[in-house]
Length: 603
Image 1 (cartoon, one colour):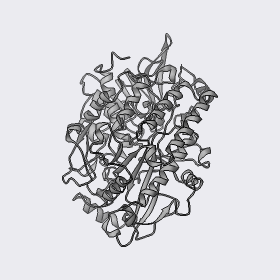
Image 2: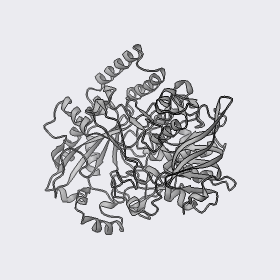
Image 3: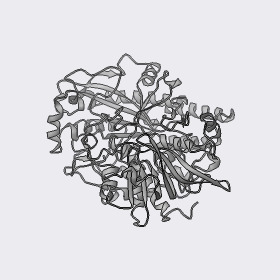
Image 4: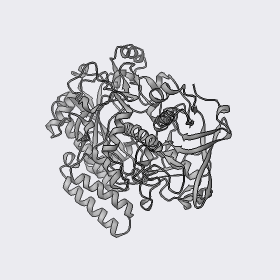
């Protein structure tokens, strides 16, 4: 199905797409709709076609740290997180992270997308992107609509490639979760796809209930189009750099160099080279090619061809931790949780149930709530005032660039208007640390996610060796407000667990543990236990050049004539949701930009 090296090495293609992941495969599918256009996709990982470990819904997280599926990145030690180096999983396989993610498939708030335009990207707003959310996705209504599920078919397109629905099996904990939230002033949202996600709702998932398997870019975009003679996909091809020539101050890509089976090969580009390698690898490849901050490139021994300081900067990351509690023994049989999967003998039984759309493998954590600061914290006003004072002082001292000031202004406005700022996800099982579960018990975890951090990090090359991972420094909690909001979210989750009807179902708290009562103790727990949510953005930001931008609104890299970036790295200000659906929408929009169908008059 995929190509051989002989079909690629020293050959010329109209478009070379670097990265066969969520974005790259979707983009390739659309560009190759024109029979006269040749498209090459280079993917560093294996194909893993028809792999049950990728397709089976309830198998979550087993791919992490497995080189067959995962890049297994590590950050630098984080000084505001007790010196921890954090693990960042990313899909290293055809389909990228859409092959190994946790299935959440939904959209952000309207204001999150409109912020792109407010930061200088004319035309990039909710009204435009909504068309591409629709184009990329195909909603499959559930066979049985459970009470906690709500949607409006007028907001759901049924014809797009990526099939999505709701988890086939519920845990039984969803309704108590929603009722407890309602008692705390959090309503249930009827249709979050409308652009208003504030409140509680059931997230759809990228699972096709008709096939009972993962729906991702490989089987939804590539599989139906793999027969196209003008679409070439080479796996196990690690791109080392883009070959450039420079004339009249503008760099033009002539092709790419890539490593295959230990040898360096070249493919030539007739029209464009498009980076869809993700927020970690796209900036790395630009820098290895000589496009980036001159100081970074000099330190790594790379000749500077385009001095573009924004490459690898403005990195933003969602983070998560959680509160785990026992489900009381006398009621635990009423609920289905993932805890049974700690028994290896349970998989065969659950596989049989999945064939009927039932059991643990048919479940995904999808009961979710997006909350404003004034809901989660009684001290919201004081926290806001302290944050504003910190930012004002930072501006006066020159700590914050004009670019960051613009972003902070939008973030502060969002908090002032009571827009969602954080998230609580109901997980039916034990998924926290450091304490571990006991055999035979069932647990509930309220997963706490910080979705709009003020801290900004960086991703840069540390050497000119393309096979070395880049240096990932997310600068976690370097803006103290991020940790303060995180602490408040844990406290809110504890109050939620003590609210009926959850209170009657739950027993002892395992993590953080009832002994951790002060803000300092909770903060220490978070520093030691939090993890990434694998939602990195911003490293090739779509911003004006003077604001540290890397790409313009047509996704073209500044200082180049024919290089674009199409992946999550272009998001200039992070969206407050799980980003899978947004990456597909960006890819669909990018295809129309490249084809000249949209945004051509809004440069």
